[in-house]
Length: 175
Image (cartoon, rainbow, N blue to C red; front, side, top):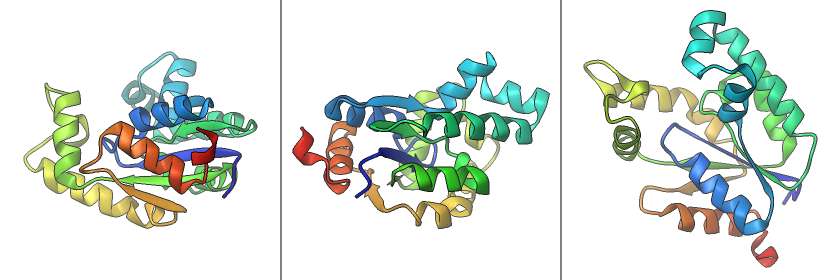
């Protein structure tokens, strides 16, 4: 497999950041969380960027930072959940290294997001949060299916998911 970089995609709550950090630590590679990179550069949270400047501008910032990150090798990059919907960003992701999708059930996603955002699941507010999660996940599934590998994470700890990512990407010998 492509040893340049490992890019981790998946729905919010699938564990992209936590798993990615562990993969990077175990391989001795750098770690980037694309959402964090954009927020840091913009100096504002994602929702504020999107509200004030629009979703298109957020996507442009994300695509720009992704292209910069992908110039280097031996990195693990957690890709923002919505990044894969932008065709230009998706092409950058696919050309940057090995793409691994972390897959979790809507129930697991809801549980994890509820723990992360105890005052309300930001991605699924309203009367039918599970329905919203299911719909949004289904909208993105065709892109997730294009990843070279998929790791089902419902029953895995982040450490177990990281070991599986490393094994699938052919880097187990580097540990």
